[in-house]
Amino acid sequence: MFRILIRQKLPLEKFHEKFAVQLNDTHPAIAIAELMRLLVDEYVMPWPQAWHVTCKTFAYTNHTLLPEALERWSLAVFGRVLPRHLQIIFEINAHFLEEVRIRFLGDEARISRLSLIDESGERYVRMAHLACVGSHAINGVAALHSELLKSDVLKDFYEMWPHKFSNKTNGVTPRRWMVLSNPRLSDLITEHIGDGWIKDLSQLKRLEPLAEDAGFRSRWREIKQHNKRQFAAVTLTRTGIVADPDSLFDVLVKRIHEYKRQHLKVLHIVSLYHAIKSNPSLAVQPRTFIFGGKAAPGYHLAKLMIKLITAVGEVVNRDPDVRGRLKVVFLPNFNVTNGQRVYPAADLSEQISTAGKEASGTGNMKFSMNGALTIGTLDGANIEIREEVGAENFFLFGLSAAEVYDYKARGYRPMDYYNANQGLRDVIDLIRSGFFSRGDTELFRPLIDGLMHEDPYLLFADFQSYIECQAKVDAAYRDTERWTRMAILNTARSGKFSSDRTIREYCKDIWHIEPVPINLLTHAEAGSA
Ligand SMILES: *Cc1c(COP(=O)(O)O)cnc(C)c1O
Image 1 (cartoon, rainbow, N blue to C red):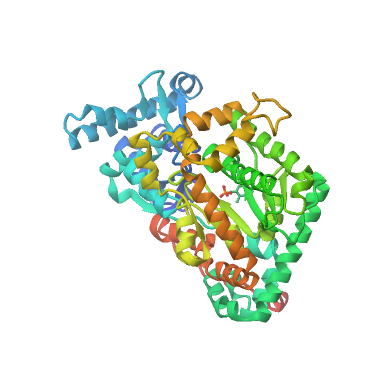
Image 2 (cartoon, protein in one colour):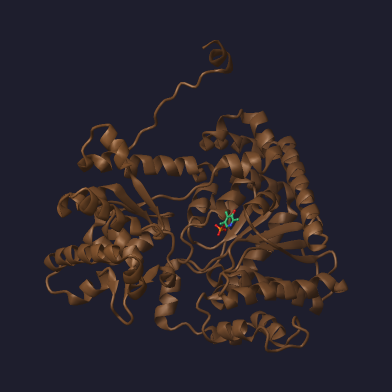
């Protein structure tokens, strides 16, 4: 980059006018210290000028609201591996804390909260703080997330520099997540509104009137049915489990994590299973529950959640009493390739994280674009999806982020919910009894005891609301025409969630760049040139 500037005979003081660096989370935040090192050590630029250039160059996108996920690097290791960078970070910190001291006279608590160095125990570099201090722009990836950064996670930085903060709601590319992965639906759309939507997703709006066209709805259903059959074939090869394409495909695919609450989905399945066992003639909407996702290597509870899913699956899939009604599939090795097969085959998109924990989510967008209906909490981009598709085309349940905060502040007691709710008690007791673990009452204890005594992600508080909302899903699905209308409107109103829109916002508000018109030669012109 320096070589380019030098060749163009531009001074390094103009570096930030020619280059922008977007820190995609804190992992590359060390680049702030590295640019300072290059400017100050290699190009002998005075510190204040180098700092000006650096801050104007960098911008930071935060991706998590979980405080335990904020990156910290041990000072001891840092000093051994990158001693000069650590010196530079100390120098940045000294200048920064001086500024804090002048702004907030004598507020020592604030100074230690804001410091780039965590000195509460063993000393660490707080990489998110380095990213905030060294960037001219800071953003979250959904409206709620950006608000929570300002009011909670990065509150002190917001009070220091409110002008740095903005929101950039995530998006996904319709080229991969519709055209490539769902060619039949894409062709149907193009047949009716032309292919302009592929580069301008807002044009999907033109599908809205077609929701009232019975012929269009019928073709829409045929395509969904085709996608479900194709996916069932994949499932059969991978797992040996037969999934009925006429059942409701209820899909929860994403990284396995307590805050994403895959175990809440399991509580729903066990609750249906228990209801059928208690009353074998019970009429229930047949469903295939499809899970996919990886757990981080050392995250034992996440591994145990996978075990719980497959253990419940083994019992449910074998039980003749529920045959033709409930099936549970855990699709191994969930990745983008498998994602491309599963999102287009979904009827129901499960977005059930504890409100205030999911930064944005992007799976939620892929589902909605492909005509799956969402059951979800008011979390991350779910809120914006619901605003776009309309509350009547979205299945909402659970506490809001503000209510979650209140519950925790007042002292949440999951046991009270267990004691008060027979349905919840039946489910928890069945798992605890070893019914899904061949009589082993110890296997799922860490998970179940955790819920009974702590339940940090409020599964018990949201359980009843989730179960009742799922009953509404059943009723809506039974009305095939109504369901198809809702599905079409989901796709028609998903234009906002194109990454083209997101990138345009970064261009305009953060990078200050404009599109460069390029004259693409046609084939004929290229030939005669
Ligand atoms: C889209 C996608 C995700 C993100 O899913 P969320 O539901 O937003 O957590 C994760 N993994 C893969 C393979 C994906 O395609």
